[in-house]
Length: 632
Ligand SMILES: O=C(O)c1ccc(O)c(O)c1
Ligand SMILES: [Mg+2]
Image (cartoon, rainbow, N blue to C red; front, top):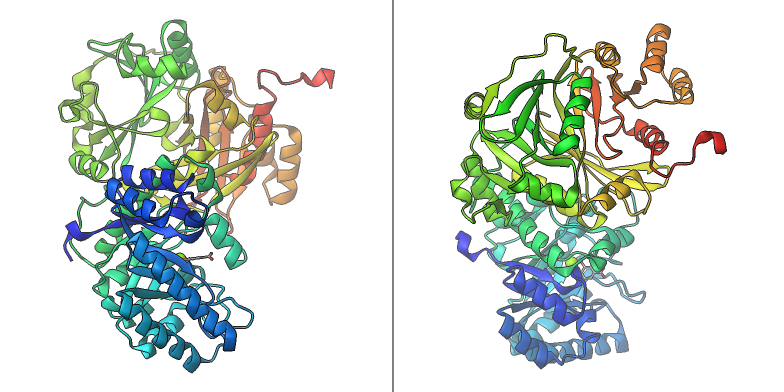
């Protein structure tokens, strides 16, 4: 199979809108074809011939018509009617201009499970399909009455042994039931009539409800879709990969966004699958992020000065001034914070819409050219002020909320600072806070984009997803998804909320779109950090005594240590193996963005999720319209 033959398709059910809108969105995103979902056609005012003409105009192929339900195993008159129905749909397919149809395994209460009967039904159907030049694909629904496993569907198709009857594999049905993907090796590639892909978050839920509401794109959930596709490619199957996503959010999201993400997700999962089986791929491998080299803030005038004072209070020292620009560099340990006060350029444009905020990050990679090439293949836009991204001294990609991700080759880091910045004489009285590095960045995005940004980070840099968390803000639920490089050197959390008044939502309301809301800094001694911050007069978030009383009851903590945590406003968590995690928060700058200080012990891998609600409640006390405690 050559790469150029890799076709992407999408089922109309995956997209919002009328059938016309769905088809236009699919075409605009670059799909080669669509599956027409029956309900979308039934509800449309377009005749099948109109649909065909529209597909032709848009340059889309109709690759599949689906689903045909409750065909096999029916007795007597019901069986006759099922065959009549099949003939009617074959006529319709001719008008639509498609030669392929999906028959899903029966859920009919009268359907009989007898194998020989089912085989006879499909063999007879194969004869009718053959006369019409139609291929029927049999899909095992995970909740099918008698057939709910692709291994059984294959046993039936194999026994039918008819050139017009094949199998359809759908990753959701197989992976939701934890059927080993290696079982696909038993199927010859030319008997696979079509392939449907969907991922899903790992939820303990009824299979039908999970499928109809929570499917998402490959790279957005917890199923091993790449492993599934790898086994399909291994069979020699060279047909399209098609998205079939039933998702409540996608039903209301812009069709354009879902279609673009969908196209990216297919390219991503095909690439990942090809790598698993050492097949040639169409894009460079994901480059792991080796670390976050800097965080850039945009601020001017008095805001820039206040931001500098705030950094100083948090233990940062002014170490450099840009040779030609109104840009300063603040450092502590391995952490660089940049303040960009330029009146022109990207930072200033970002400031105009988002106000004083984090406008960019810089990440270290081994090969930035490979990152740029992979981004281009995935349809991720490079930033370019003059439309010539190749000429930027430091290339950048568009990221969360329109912010930038600058790419820096690991070997050029030292030279970069020396080349661009004049050293500043350091303040001899400065007090540090024992910060070593950046632990993670936390971004807030619109709920509609929550899954998009996961796909972005996972597909571009190969970040891995940890279990999703739902966090309780006093004003509503916040969804949180942590992503990290395999070695934990780079971590980012993505947060989104449907509720109007949560801290996340208020952050979004302030600017246009999302952005980075906090930066977590690593320390090896949280109490030394607390001391440094106190000596500097840093404004820290107060944690109520109730929290520490509960902490003492929950964990077997040393009394002296527990008292220090309470005094210093330190939050604590422990994983199942007893590895500890300490956290402490700064007050937010203008109630917008803030810093976290964390200490991880013995490989604690989480983010203190049990404490997030307490932190949000504490921050809520400082919201602009919070009711003073005395008046309650
Ligand atoms: O939920 C369903 O009924 C349904 C229908 C057709 C499919 O291809 C599928 O995977 C699920
Ligand atoms: Mg399906």
